[in-house]
Length: 124
View: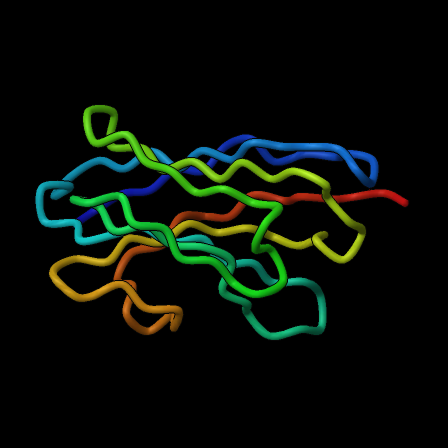
């Protein structure tokens, strides 16, 4: 089992920045990667970013590439999502997820553990 706790969401004006954190506990030694997904009201869940745990290789969704940066700290079992140049369309509930023993993908089904989500609201 892996437990995930997100933090760092909030309200920000367009053009601003936020940093999300996702702290993992439990069987973290089995993690192959962590990802961030978001879901806005009335929309499907969208892949935002992911990072391979051992090598730290990042992957990004097209809508956030160049604005968001994902990173991880193995020692702290934490993944981070630095979000810059935020837009109103970035407003959503952001959830982190952990994959154990499988290759990192952009599809939610590959991730077996999920956090509770944190709200990000970008005002225009």
